[in-house]
Length: 81
Image (cartoon, rainbow, N blue to C red; front, side, top):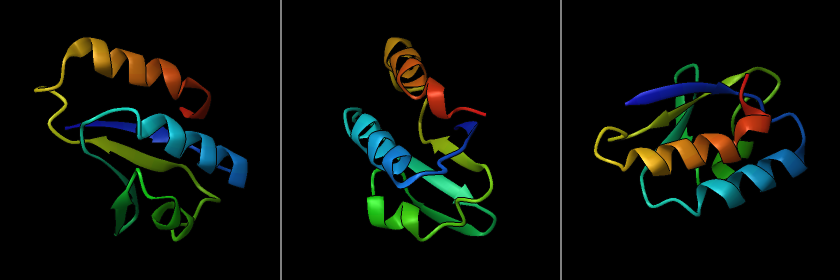
């Protein structure tokens, strides 16, 4: 599992983020404290405390092609802390 800190401060940021991560076929979660939601769920993300940085967890990242992980990180670069 790989973990990255991200910040989604505006509703438009959440929409853009969800559109990006839905292009990738591996599982991703967002964790804020004890709460974990599917990173591809716009409603789930809005249930988190977005006033702070949240953690993106990429499941089975070692099994995914490195090129896909690199492309994802490039696409979400504006949201990385």
